[in-house]
Image (tube, rainbow over all chains, first blue to last red; front, top):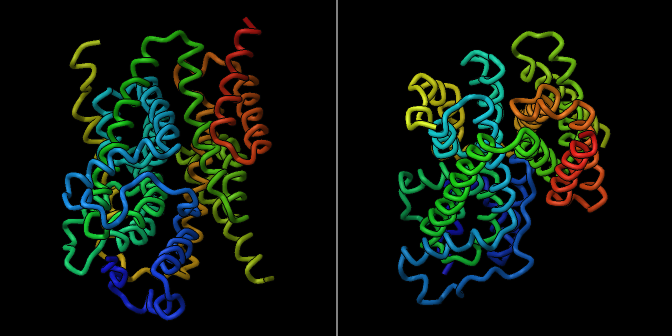
Length: 295
Length: 116
C-alpha cells in the first residue's frame, strides 16, 4: 500500500498532480520528469523490470532485508561500473596531485559528489586558495539541492521524521537519484529508507575500493598506464555529462565551458575555472532565455 | 609507502572540510530542511545549472590541457586526439559512455606505443 503519495508537505506543489492523474504510477513519473529539468538529468524510469520481490512479499517485512536488497541492487545497474571507473580516476588524480589516500577516501565518504571532488582536487592542486576552491565546489553542488528535494518525497511517509532522512539526503547524488526513480516504485514505501541506505552503502563501498585501487595503481604503474588511469576522469565526466545534456542550454554550457577554459587560463587569475564557468554558463542561459522568448 | 604518508597531514584534511565538505553538504541539508518551498519555475536554477555544467567542463578541459602527474608524460596532441576520438565514437554509438571511454583510452595507449 503506497500510503505516502501525499507526502510532499506543500500540497500546492503537487496538488494538481493528484487531480490530473488517477494512477499512482503516472503521478510518480510526472514528479520525476518535472524535477529532472532542474537537477540536470532525465531519469529513465523502469522500462525493464528490476529483479526485486513483489511489493506484498514477506521479504520486505524486515528493514534489514530491505537494506540487503538495496545493497544487492548495485549489481543491477551499469552506473555502478561508471562510478567505479570515475572513482578509480579520482584516486589516481589524488595521488598525482599529492593528496594522501586517507584524504581521498575522506573526500569520497564526506563529499560524495564526483564533480565536487574533482573540482576540489584540481583547484587545490593547481594552487587556488581555499576560498576559491570552496566557491567552485559550492557552485557545482547547488544542483544537489533540487535533487534532494525531488528524491526525499519518494521515501517519506506521514510518520517519517526529518532526521531519519539525513543519511538518504547525504547519499543523494546523481547516480542514487537516477536509481531511486528506477527502483523505489518496486519497494514498499515504509521500507524505502532502509533500501536506499543499502543502495547508498553499496555504492559508497564500491567507490572507496575504486579510490584505493586507483591510488595504488597511479603510485605503482608505468607512466603510460598511470596516464591512462588519469585520462579516465575527463573521459568519463565528459561523456556522462554529455549524455545527461538534454536541453540546448546544457550542450552550450558544456561545449563553451571547455572552449573558454584555455582562454580564461591565459589570464592567470587563479580563478580560471570560475571565470570560464560563469561566462560560459551565463551565455548558455542566454541561449535558453532567447529560445524561451522566441518560442 | 608508510602509514603516515597514507594519512597525510591534518592541515590537508581540515582544508578538505572547509573547501570541500561544507560547501557541498550545505545544499543537501538545505534541500532536506526547506525542500517543499522550492520554486519549480525558477530561472535562477536554470542559470545555476548551466554555470555548474560549464565549471565541470572547465575542470575536464583543465585536466586535458594542464595534465596532472603521469598524464603529463602523454604528448599534447595525443591527449586531445584521445578525447576527440572518444567523442566521435560516443556520438556515433548514440551516446554510449562505455564506448567513448574505451576508444579514448585505446587511442591514447596505441598512440603512445606507436610513438615509442
